[in-house]
Image (cartoon, rainbow, N blue to C red):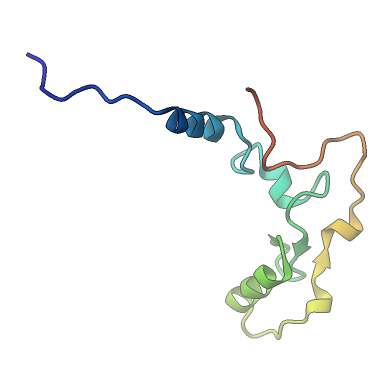
Length: 104
């Protein structure tokens, strides 16, 4: 016999949220690796640590990284490498998009 529970019916909002989560590039996984590292198209990682070459999206995050990973070296903001200034994005390539949709 089957249980007494009624089958769950999904709302349109819940279905739309699932479709959005499945089809939107959030910048993770292999697809977002280029965006995170900043190697191509400028990427989201704007700043690079001069000591270990790890990347961060802003100066505040780079300072947090520096305090955690290099506590004996004083943080100097002028030594942080700006990847967007050194890399020129090709106009033919699309910009890195976190909100871009794969399919509709």
